[in-house]
Image (cartoon, rainbow, N blue to C red; front, top):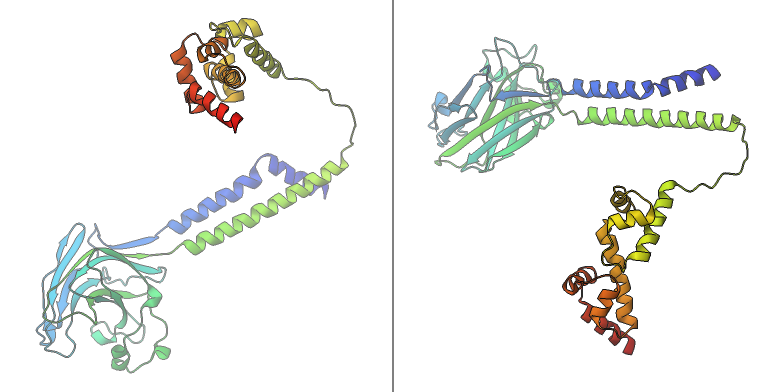
Length: 378
């Protein structure tokens, strides 16, 4: 048992018990940041192909412009025409690169910065490959996942959790399947993403969409919380063990009783002499720090720092407070003229006395005396 305690104290003294978990937490946090965000657009490497589409390919009359792609935006405009029962138009983003599917299974949501004018909603589609079901050149065998989103005419960032995407009813009917049979979405093999008109897009009205950013994000908050919880538990356990060891060690120590010496600090003695000297000489109009130093036997260079540390004020402020405090007493208890009171406490400049008095008390000496007399009479 003693060997375990000695080992613990050895590691504690060298801060190893503190450093190791901290380094572990930092490393874990860094690891959770790796590949946190997968940016589809803007994409400097132009990995993902972007085009527009409409129902014109199925004899529809909907019109759509080619995408205008710049460094930080994709713009396109479409007008729905109700020739087909379900007219459509939108932006197509291929997620496949070099015939390889995009694996989104480690991500939590899609972050979409977009503005759409003249429509209340838009729809986001994700398409995936299902092993044993999907045939690449047979369009409707691709797994369709849909999310309808309210539109904003001002550029907004939409956070759409991947678990909010559902299979459209028409796709389930087309593939003669159900949610139970098809199971959870297959995010490991993504084919494409589409941003399309929503259910409440008006007909015969030009709708302009501008996309500024498309990204898939891994939410690391749970990892952060877990790491934080583990770290807190470790430090509580560490503190508990350390305090118990200290308690046991203290109990074993031999207690020797003795009378403690009462010794006054040198600084306290110097401060006491300074205060006594000021109290004795404040009425001297020529009283300075140098005179105070000679009177108190304390270096003139130390006095300002000592007053600052003890009273948070300089020598002049300290001297003024004492002088004005005594001037207030004279104004209350005597009928001497104000100028006489000022001279008695060390001021030979009456305007300066008046300014200092009002600065400290908020009223002039005359107003102060009048107020004191009124309170006395009342």
